[in-house]
Length: 292
Image (cartoon, rainbow, N blue to C red; front, side, top):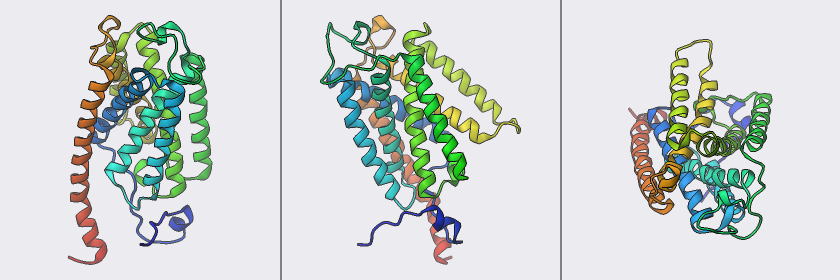
């Protein structure tokens, strides 16, 4: 069986051949799935690190390796496949959850439950705190965007069709999801707003971004990336609201139960996206093959 072809930037720039898109259209369904995936990423990350007591260090390593595997599958795919794409989004959300926790937290009692004195093998966390962790992640995300800008490749998701552009896209996604987790945990734990208040604040900012889409002076690409970062803290606060104890303002549904329900919802949404993709792809395939 021939190896799947991975298009490079030279492949695209040097020919007039048709290039299959690798990323989804940005629609309302896209954002619903993004929020579902990031909320599941929060609850699943906490399930492994806290409920199963693997700790932030081991869980971060394991989830980062899962991210690498899912990313390789996505990069080697020749066209957009909803299951591949959203699996990578989920893996970046889970890895981002524990990477953020490992950066920002430590072995203090406020981060441990049930009287535990430690959490898994290895370092308990770097204890940088949310402001410092967020500053580091914002700087790293800006570096990625500067490199991206210097390559001359597009930031528009619908026009990303080359290997290098997609690799930069996923690097930005991983860092933005980690940053979003830090922002969500800060809003929930340190800002005084609580889980519901943090979610309402992020929702309000997202509503402003929707309004700015009608302002010609504001590029939609900029609004997309801001919204992409902000939907992560929305998912983080929603996940915390579902899983945290009643005494802390949560619903105390548990990480396992919440993760199972969210996974079922996300799989259902991926199935729906797959059906829609096949419906829209059929006319394109007919045109390309010359069959009318």
